[in-house]
Image (tube, rainbow, N blue to C red; front, side, top):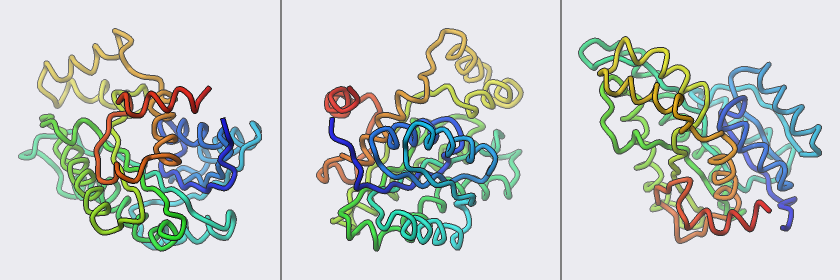
Length: 261
């Protein structure tokens, strides 16, 4: 299908897992991608991979919890690509796995800073340019936004807030399409952390569930939801603005299959 050569996209949390997979798909489609993460080494590896496959990519080492850094990400993107068409807010941390009564307030705060204020800072910095391009914001959420997972309170609450922020953006910015997406259970470092940590802090059935997902081969490879997120960043219809979508929703999968092949 047609290449998206006139599109510039920022992907946060792009050094590994879902963000890297999303960026690869975007670059393969001809979009210019600004890759953002805290870990510069891993980020440069992804940048090199995209460039080697003929893609346009630029690594920007930054922490999305820092509002000044987020403004700089947008500035650098405009300097390099001359435009901004989409923002994929994928950077996220699992945060503390602890019951509320036993939890560390600073660890909770850190999760909210990265998972909620990160997308807020990025959206705030990017919106003037996204208005110009009639662009899109894709907030990578989680099924945890609608499920009460004992000992994962900070993460669950952060994702519920992110979904509602998506609806706020849709209400405030009719010229920009803002969606949240549930990427499913993906074989990424976050799942590894869950398997390692869950047995000591989570209820036994919940810890067992994460073990079983991996053992039964039920984790999606990152490129599967990554393709859905990339498609949403470039093609989400404006009347979807404000919605929380599943990566494997038939509404996405049907146009996606034609787009990918």
